[in-house]
Image (cartoon, rainbow, N blue to C red; front, top):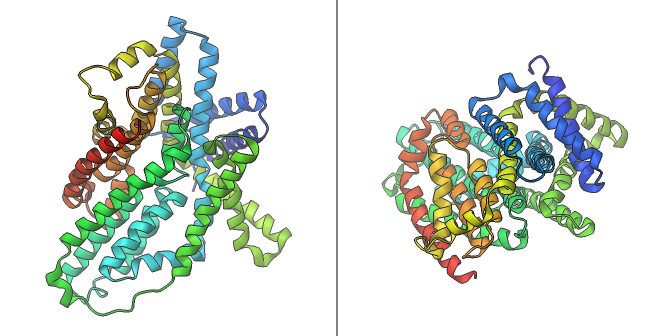
Length: 471
């Protein structure tokens, strides 16, 4: 059910998405101004229902705007327009995931793949659930936690554990941690992630071809460490109590989901090459295109004409109830993009450069400090999108970096991944806690605490080594 006025805000958001997408293909100034106004209209329409932390972000953006106007720094109107463009881009990038999520919601392929991930022997199940958390996280973002979390809850019954509550509890802990850790690497290793879009927008000198391989390699370090920790902590004394069962075999479903992710990526790559636009902008086009095509495939038995009508009706109907619920995320994302761009334009580059290149900060440790600068605010409840956007914009403003920009950017998104594993105030921790009936603190600190500390140490060494190699 949507609230009164929800259909209006959904229509506003759809209009903004359409303007941003068309502008990618047909850059007209009128489309940019329309998308800016529609973004402000959406936030205004949903203001009374936006969460407090999002209101604080919008308030900070307003205060920074007032300060910029009062000081008259640079071309204020031009800077504000560019900041709104970034905000609209981040909002669209997030909202666009709706098309893939909606198709996945009723996909038999997703259902088969979910069952394949869960119905396995313990060691293999951990590895596949981690992979599932990552792959589905690319398509569904945080929706993967609901999808696979429900599967975990359903399949991990007391009966399936042979009536042994201890076995059921151990299974639950291992499966939940596998899912959380797999999802946590999406900021590092997903071509569709908002983190990559933030970095490529805030630091235009970066390119996905260098950041994505580095992120994937760092993600593998996290997954490998998680697998090792799970193996070492496995309760071997309970093995003889586990009832026998036949694991699910459906590699074709896994191949199908992997192929779908690659299709989105390579379609965007085709748009990037053909249109000469950044990959993050090309993703704005490929995501809804593949999502709608996936939906159309589900209605293929109805024929082209009727199937298209059913898809259109479903998209409009579901968007009317879903888009108003994006209010808090969109307010935070758009405000973070606005603040980061405005900060980058107004901050004194010389001052930033002197801080980053200060003699008491050894350059080789800067990636580690960048990671820490994201993790600590996240522990206090500040979304990594905020800290990464502002810090990346600050790095871009600095006239000279004493270390490769790729190393610093990698430190920022590595901090984002650790934040997902460690902060009790993230949506992922709270959602998983609610699904399995445990406090978020139990999951991220009680169950995952040692892994997070080990991860921070290992990633610190990894980033330091990369900082030395990438010069």
